[in-house]
Amino acid sequence: MAYAMIADKAGAAGVFKKQEIELAKPKKGEALIKHTAIGINFIDIYQRSGLYPAPGGYPCILGCEGAGVVEAVGAGVKSVKVGDRVAWTVPGGGYCTHRIIAADRLVKIPNGVSDEVAAAAILKGLTAHYLIHDCYKPKKDDTVLVHAAAGGVGLIVGQWLKDKGVNAIGTAGGSAKCKLAKKAGYASVIDYKKDDFVAKTMRLTKKEGVAAVYDSVGKDTYPGSLEVLQNFGMFVAFGQSSGPATDFQMAHLSAHGSLFMTRPTLFHYIAGDELQKRAKQLFKMIADGKIEIQVNQTYPLAKVASAHRDLEGRKTTGQTVLIP
Image (tube, rainbow, N blue to C red):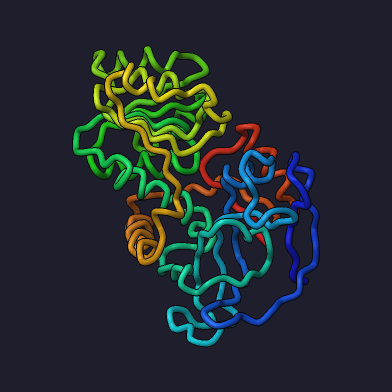
Protein backbone atom coordinates (compact mmCIF):
# COMPACT_ATOMS: atom_id res chain seq x y z
CA MET A 1 0.00 0.00 0.00
CA ALA A 2 1.27 3.45 -0.91
CA TYR A 3 0.78 5.86 1.96
CA ALA A 4 1.83 9.20 3.41
CA MET A 5 2.12 10.61 6.92
CA ILE A 6 0.00 13.74 6.71
CA ALA A 7 -0.17 16.73 9.05
CA ASP A 8 -3.68 18.16 8.97
CA LYS A 9 -2.70 21.27 10.93
CA ALA A 10 0.18 22.87 12.76
CA GLY A 11 0.87 21.46 16.19
CA ALA A 12 2.78 18.94 18.27
CA ALA A 13 4.26 15.74 16.84
CA GLY A 14 0.98 13.90 17.36
CA VAL A 15 -0.65 15.67 14.38
CA PHE A 16 0.65 13.07 11.91
CA LYS A 17 -1.86 10.63 10.45
CA LYS A 18 -1.26 7.70 8.10
CA GLN A 19 -3.24 8.01 4.89
CA GLU A 20 -3.34 5.83 1.78
CA ILE A 21 -2.43 7.65 -1.44
CA GLU A 22 -3.15 6.89 -5.08
CA LEU A 23 -0.22 6.74 -7.45
CA ALA A 24 -0.55 9.00 -10.47
CA LYS A 25 1.45 8.78 -13.68
CA PRO A 26 4.29 11.29 -14.03
CA LYS A 27 3.62 14.14 -16.44
CA LYS A 28 6.06 15.73 -18.87
CA GLY A 29 9.37 16.41 -17.13
CA GLU A 30 8.44 14.41 -14.02
CA ALA A 31 9.46 11.10 -12.46
CA LEU A 32 7.76 8.70 -10.04
CA ILE A 33 10.01 7.69 -7.15
CA LYS A 34 9.59 4.78 -4.76
CA HIS A 35 11.25 5.90 -1.55
CA THR A 36 13.83 3.76 0.18
CA ALA A 37 14.88 6.33 2.80
CA ILE A 38 13.72 9.79 3.90
CA GLY A 39 15.73 12.32 5.85
CA ILE A 40 14.45 14.41 8.76
CA ASN A 41 15.52 18.00 9.43
CA PHE A 42 14.74 20.79 11.85
CA ILE A 43 12.94 22.66 9.09
CA ASP A 44 10.36 19.85 9.16
CA ILE A 45 9.77 20.57 12.83
CA TYR A 46 9.54 24.31 12.23
CA GLN A 47 6.88 23.67 9.57
CA ARG A 48 4.98 21.10 11.61
CA SER A 49 4.86 23.36 14.67
CA GLY A 50 3.75 26.39 12.68
CA LEU A 51 6.94 28.39 13.25
CA TYR A 52 7.45 28.29 9.47
CA PRO A 53 4.61 27.96 6.95
CA ALA A 54 4.08 24.46 5.64
CA PRO A 55 4.80 24.04 1.91
CA GLY A 56 1.46 24.46 0.16
CA GLY A 57 -0.42 24.90 3.44
CA TYR A 58 -2.35 22.29 5.43
CA PRO A 59 -3.07 19.44 5.15
CA CYS A 60 0.47 18.74 4.02
CA ILE A 61 3.16 16.12 3.59
CA LEU A 62 6.38 17.32 5.18
CA GLY A 63 9.91 16.12 4.51
CA CYS A 64 12.54 17.91 2.43
CA GLU A 65 15.01 15.19 1.44
CA GLY A 66 14.96 11.56 0.44
CA ALA A 67 16.24 8.79 -1.78
CA GLY A 68 14.68 6.03 -3.79
CA VAL A 69 14.34 4.29 -7.12
CA VAL A 70 12.80 5.70 -10.29
CA GLU A 71 9.68 3.67 -11.15
CA ALA A 72 8.39 5.70 -14.10
CA VAL A 73 9.23 8.84 -16.06
CA GLY A 74 7.12 11.31 -18.00
CA ALA A 75 7.58 12.55 -21.52
CA GLY A 76 10.84 14.27 -22.32
CA VAL A 77 12.77 13.01 -19.31
CA LYS A 78 16.33 12.03 -20.26
CA SER A 79 18.30 12.87 -17.11
CA VAL A 80 17.09 9.74 -15.26
CA LYS A 81 15.58 6.41 -16.26
CA VAL A 82 13.58 3.63 -14.62
CA GLY A 83 15.72 1.77 -12.09
CA ASP A 84 18.07 4.65 -11.30
CA ARG A 85 18.91 5.28 -7.67
CA VAL A 86 18.29 8.95 -7.00
CA ALA A 87 18.21 11.50 -4.20
CA TRP A 88 16.34 14.79 -3.99
CA THR A 89 15.79 17.83 -1.80
CA VAL A 90 12.80 20.11 -2.38
CA PRO A 91 10.44 21.88 0.04
CA GLY A 92 8.04 19.28 1.40
CA GLY A 93 6.40 16.14 0.07
CA GLY A 94 8.81 13.59 1.52
CA TYR A 95 7.02 11.65 4.26
CA CYS A 96 5.50 9.07 1.90
CA THR A 97 6.30 5.77 0.24
CA HIS A 98 6.10 7.20 -3.30
CA ARG A 99 6.17 10.65 -4.83
CA ILE A 100 6.21 12.42 -8.17
CA ILE A 101 8.91 15.05 -8.57
CA ALA A 102 10.42 17.20 -11.32
CA ALA A 103 13.15 15.08 -12.90
CA ASP A 104 15.62 17.98 -13.01
CA ARG A 105 15.53 18.06 -9.19
CA LEU A 106 16.84 14.49 -8.98
CA VAL A 107 20.49 13.63 -8.39
CA LYS A 108 21.83 10.20 -9.30
CA ILE A 109 23.38 8.38 -6.34
CA PRO A 110 26.88 7.17 -7.21
CA ASN A 111 28.25 3.72 -6.42
CA GLY A 112 29.70 3.60 -2.94
CA VAL A 113 26.96 5.76 -1.43
CA SER A 114 23.96 3.98 0.12
CA ASP A 115 20.38 5.19 -0.17
CA GLU A 116 20.23 5.87 3.58
CA VAL A 117 23.38 7.97 3.44
CA ALA A 118 22.16 9.85 0.37
CA ALA A 119 18.79 10.57 1.99
CA ALA A 120 20.47 11.75 5.17
CA ALA A 121 23.12 13.81 3.41
CA ILE A 122 21.65 15.65 0.48
CA LEU A 123 19.90 18.53 2.29
CA LYS A 124 22.35 18.78 5.17
CA GLY A 125 25.38 18.16 2.97
CA LEU A 126 24.35 20.76 0.42
CA THR A 127 23.68 23.14 3.31
CA ALA A 128 27.21 22.50 4.59
CA HIS A 129 28.52 23.10 1.07
CA TYR A 130 27.03 26.55 0.56
CA LEU A 131 27.78 27.63 4.14
CA ILE A 132 31.53 27.18 3.77
CA HIS A 133 31.87 27.86 0.04
CA ASP A 134 29.57 30.87 -0.30
CA CYS A 135 28.29 32.43 2.93
CA TYR A 136 31.79 32.62 4.34
CA LYS A 137 34.61 30.74 2.65
CA PRO A 138 37.27 30.24 5.32
CA LYS A 139 40.88 30.21 4.27
CA LYS A 140 43.42 27.68 5.47
CA ASP A 141 44.32 28.36 9.12
CA ASP A 142 41.27 30.61 9.65
CA THR A 143 39.46 30.04 12.95
CA VAL A 144 35.66 29.76 12.88
CA LEU A 145 32.95 28.77 15.37
CA VAL A 146 30.19 26.27 14.54
CA HIS A 147 27.21 25.83 16.84
CA ALA A 148 25.40 22.46 17.10
CA ALA A 149 28.61 20.74 16.02
CA ALA A 150 27.18 17.28 16.77
CA GLY A 151 24.06 17.86 14.69
CA GLY A 152 23.50 16.73 11.13
CA VAL A 153 24.95 19.80 9.42
CA GLY A 154 27.56 20.36 12.12
CA LEU A 155 29.19 16.95 11.70
CA ILE A 156 29.50 17.43 7.94
CA VAL A 157 30.83 20.98 8.30
CA GLY A 158 33.47 19.82 10.79
CA GLN A 159 34.84 17.16 8.45
CA TRP A 160 34.81 19.46 5.43
CA LEU A 161 36.59 22.26 7.29
CA LYS A 162 39.26 19.87 8.55
CA ASP A 163 39.89 18.75 4.98
CA LYS A 164 40.38 22.42 4.07
CA GLY A 165 42.84 23.01 6.90
CA VAL A 166 40.51 25.34 8.82
CA ASN A 167 40.71 25.60 12.61
CA ALA A 168 37.09 24.90 13.62
CA ILE A 169 35.73 25.33 17.13
CA GLY A 170 32.43 23.59 17.80
CA THR A 171 29.80 23.79 20.52
CA ALA A 172 27.69 20.86 21.67
CA GLY A 173 25.67 19.85 24.72
CA GLY A 174 27.09 17.05 26.88
CA SER A 175 30.21 14.93 26.82
CA ALA A 176 28.87 12.35 24.36
CA LYS A 177 28.02 14.98 21.74
CA CYS A 178 31.32 16.76 22.31
CA LYS A 179 33.22 13.52 21.67
CA LEU A 180 31.21 12.98 18.49
CA ALA A 181 32.03 16.47 17.26
CA LYS A 182 35.69 16.10 18.13
CA LYS A 183 35.82 12.89 16.12
CA ALA A 184 34.31 14.79 13.18
CA GLY A 185 37.33 17.05 12.91
CA TYR A 186 36.76 20.00 15.22
CA ALA A 187 40.03 21.26 16.70
CA SER A 188 38.21 22.16 19.94
CA VAL A 189 34.70 21.46 21.19
CA ILE A 190 32.99 23.51 23.91
CA ASP A 191 30.37 21.84 26.10
CA TYR A 192 27.84 24.65 26.45
CA LYS A 193 26.23 22.83 29.38
CA LYS A 194 29.41 23.27 31.41
CA ASP A 195 31.19 26.28 29.92
CA ASP A 196 30.32 29.76 28.72
CA PHE A 197 31.07 29.41 25.02
CA VAL A 198 31.92 33.11 24.71
CA ALA A 199 34.60 33.05 27.40
CA LYS A 200 35.95 29.69 26.23
CA THR A 201 36.13 30.80 22.60
CA MET A 202 38.02 33.94 23.54
CA ARG A 203 40.47 31.87 25.61
CA LEU A 204 41.00 29.42 22.76
CA THR A 205 41.66 32.28 20.31
CA LYS A 206 43.82 34.29 22.77
CA LYS A 207 41.17 37.01 22.78
CA GLU A 208 41.33 37.46 19.00
CA GLY A 209 37.90 35.97 18.31
CA VAL A 210 36.84 34.11 15.18
CA ALA A 211 36.48 35.07 11.53
CA ALA A 212 32.96 33.62 11.21
CA VAL A 213 30.22 31.98 13.24
CA TYR A 214 27.85 29.44 11.69
CA ASP A 215 24.77 29.55 13.93
CA SER A 216 21.76 27.27 13.51
CA VAL A 217 20.55 27.67 17.12
CA GLY A 218 19.26 31.24 17.11
CA LYS A 219 17.76 32.78 20.22
CA ASP A 220 20.05 31.10 22.78
CA THR A 221 23.31 31.70 20.96
CA TYR A 222 23.15 34.76 18.72
CA PRO A 223 24.16 37.39 21.35
CA GLY A 224 27.28 35.41 22.21
CA SER A 225 27.96 34.66 18.56
CA LEU A 226 28.30 38.38 17.88
CA GLU A 227 30.60 38.82 20.88
CA VAL A 228 33.19 36.29 19.67
CA LEU A 229 33.51 37.67 16.14
CA GLN A 230 36.54 39.65 15.05
CA ASN A 231 36.03 43.08 13.53
CA PHE A 232 34.42 42.68 10.09
CA GLY A 233 33.56 39.06 10.94
CA MET A 234 30.69 37.17 9.33
CA PHE A 235 27.65 36.00 11.29
CA VAL A 236 25.90 33.23 9.33
CA ALA A 237 22.47 32.62 10.86
CA PHE A 238 21.01 29.59 9.11
CA GLY A 239 18.57 28.17 11.67
CA GLN A 240 16.77 28.72 14.94
CA SER A 241 16.44 25.44 16.82
CA SER A 242 16.08 27.35 20.12
CA GLY A 243 13.64 29.86 18.64
CA PRO A 244 13.93 33.07 16.63
CA ALA A 245 16.16 35.93 17.74
CA THR A 246 13.24 38.34 18.13
CA ASP A 247 15.25 41.10 19.80
CA PHE A 248 18.01 41.27 17.19
CA GLN A 249 18.79 44.79 15.96
CA MET A 250 20.94 45.95 13.06
CA ALA A 251 22.84 48.19 15.47
CA HIS A 252 24.25 45.06 17.11
CA LEU A 253 26.43 44.53 14.04
CA SER A 254 28.13 47.90 14.31
CA ALA A 255 28.45 47.65 18.08
CA HIS A 256 30.44 44.42 17.83
CA GLY A 257 32.92 45.47 15.16
CA SER A 258 31.24 46.43 11.88
CA LEU A 259 30.13 42.85 11.39
CA PHE A 260 28.55 41.27 8.34
CA MET A 261 25.50 39.02 8.57
CA THR A 262 23.60 36.71 6.23
CA ARG A 263 20.42 34.69 6.68
CA PRO A 264 20.67 32.14 3.83
CA THR A 265 18.22 29.55 2.53
CA LEU A 266 19.35 26.34 0.84
CA PHE A 267 16.92 26.39 -2.06
CA HIS A 268 18.29 29.70 -3.33
CA TYR A 269 21.74 28.11 -3.51
CA ILE A 270 20.67 25.00 -5.42
CA ALA A 271 18.45 26.65 -8.01
CA GLY A 272 18.99 25.60 -11.62
CA ASP A 273 22.30 23.91 -12.44
CA GLU A 274 23.73 24.66 -9.00
CA LEU A 275 22.05 21.52 -7.61
CA GLN A 276 24.00 19.09 -9.78
CA LYS A 277 27.30 20.96 -9.35
CA ARG A 278 27.11 21.05 -5.57
CA ALA A 279 25.73 17.51 -5.23
CA LYS A 280 28.57 16.14 -7.35
CA GLN A 281 31.13 17.67 -5.01
CA LEU A 282 29.27 16.44 -1.92
CA PHE A 283 28.91 12.84 -3.09
CA LYS A 284 32.55 12.75 -4.19
CA MET A 285 33.64 13.79 -0.69
CA ILE A 286 31.46 11.00 0.74
CA ALA A 287 32.54 8.34 -1.76
CA ASP A 288 36.22 9.26 -1.24
CA GLY A 289 35.83 8.75 2.51
CA LYS A 290 36.61 12.37 3.36
CA ILE A 291 33.14 12.87 4.84
CA GLU A 292 31.43 10.16 6.85
CA ILE A 293 27.66 10.48 7.13
CA GLN A 294 26.61 9.06 10.47
CA VAL A 295 23.06 7.73 10.28
CA ASN A 296 22.68 7.25 14.01
CA GLN A 297 18.90 6.84 14.19
CA THR A 298 16.36 5.14 11.93
CA TYR A 299 12.60 4.99 12.43
CA PRO A 300 9.80 3.39 10.43
CA LEU A 301 8.01 6.02 8.33
CA ALA A 302 4.82 5.39 10.31
CA LYS A 303 6.71 6.37 13.51
CA VAL A 304 7.65 9.83 12.27
CA ALA A 305 6.07 11.42 15.37
CA SER A 306 8.59 9.63 17.59
CA ALA A 307 11.43 10.81 15.40
CA HIS A 308 10.23 14.40 15.67
CA ARG A 309 9.96 14.19 19.46
CA ASP A 310 13.47 12.81 19.80
CA LEU A 311 14.95 15.45 17.50
CA GLU A 312 13.16 18.26 19.35
CA GLY A 313 14.28 16.80 22.67
CA ARG A 314 17.97 16.87 21.60
CA LYS A 315 18.05 13.07 21.95
CA THR A 316 19.58 12.48 18.54
CA THR A 317 23.04 12.86 17.06
CA GLY A 318 24.17 12.93 13.47
CA GLN A 319 21.53 12.02 10.92
CA THR A 320 18.05 10.59 11.36
CA VAL A 321 16.32 8.63 8.61
CA LEU A 322 12.81 7.27 8.09
CA ILE A 323 12.48 3.88 6.39
CA PRO A 324 9.22 3.28 4.45
